[in-house]
Image (tube, rainbow, N blue to C red; front, side, top):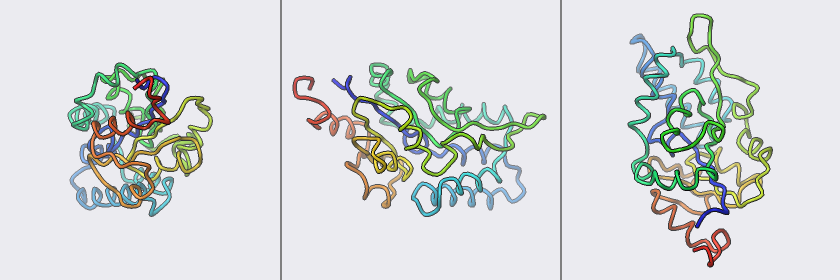
Length: 231
């Protein structure tokens, strides 16, 4: 039914119920000032995702606080696998059926996204995200600042380069997801609110999907995306 559509999914708070860097901080930070640091990271995440501050500023400031080892990343992956959005988990067959059409475009990190979405048949080659940099003693010490997804307007910049010829539908909870549609590189932006609803984002959306069934119903009935003969 949807074979003519490219689906671009966000990861944090869309594919999963949580923001992964927040969870990594909970795992990796020592008890010294831990609660204060967690609150600071959460506030920076919310400001960045709602468009109150630039994404690059949000990421840089969060990464000044977050650290972690390879084992911490492994622990994070295990935790994220238990935090898949409930209605997405129930539609695993959708991801299997349309795996060639589905991409993850995230401001998060491939280091933890790849192994999580692999359980939903999404190949690593269809995952576009940031990457950590590591110190010689095996600790996260930053991120690749040359990756467009670490920069402002990173998502539309990336999707433009992907040069899709099919209709593109973006599904996400953040302002950075809307930017793909805003800059003209997506046909629809669906604000996904199963886990969080941001007014600055939902007011920009073509549709607000409260869960995955809601999303599927909307797409199924959009005749400009799904011709009647395919429906």
